[in-house]
Length: 353
Image 1 (cartoon, rainbow, N blue to C red):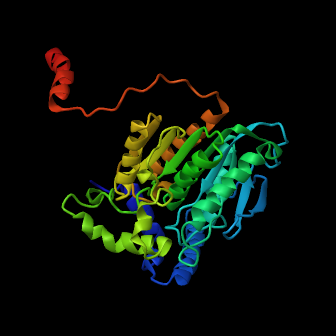
Image 2 (cartoon, rainbow, N blue to C red):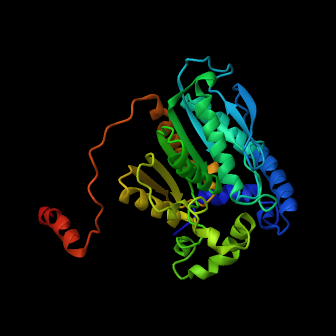
């Protein structure tokens, strides 16, 4: 495994001392990473895309209210009846940092809305450890539910709704999708999960993303503090379906999913495992792994060719929401391909040689 040299060059460009994401004090970590995001926005030469926006506060019974920002694809809000697709998206930040006001996330929301011709609704959830689980899944579901119920007024089509997120935001998007299936069953066209963490037990962490000689236990010092800040000391919560959507008792009936992972990200195992879980439940799911990429390099558009390609993949995927969904045949039960089957598949090719 080798790091993409374009990623390495861009990381050198952005390097500024110690990684603020590892500061042990949550408030200070938040302050430092926010400053780092503003600096990266400038260093990477981002250009603000002018689109119409609107903010809304959503009441979440029993939990702190949640804020969202609507991004329309043009400089004017869509009129009711425009029936545009809409993506409800949740930012990543290890449950403790980042937000919809970060220039980097704001740039991504504006760009995707504009280039895909869809409405993007960016949802904000409370930071841990000041506010802990299950507040965040409830907030994210409340945002999603609000969007569906107000879709027509936003100029959106409630039958063309996607839900997505990155990293911890992908965890919350998957959790909100489960909550929706249990409570309201609003139609969802797509789950778009980028570098997702969907098993907070750590059971699917993949140390081979760092080194083939690294034991899984070596990842615990990085993973454990994040989980404890979000869930608190009760280890039983790690298996709760809203904390670890991969461990939900069933995934049957969930919407189709596109899952994007990175070769050099220990969370790549979560994305692959979730794809297989959806397959077993008969859910159409696609998992793409970007070689030489890290957990965060997908955000380095304009500097890393693979990041640009990931962006085009996402935009193309979002554009499919404008079309009617395809009808697939009933999937066959997944099965393991053994050595005999592999040999049988290879023999015709070998004979042609």
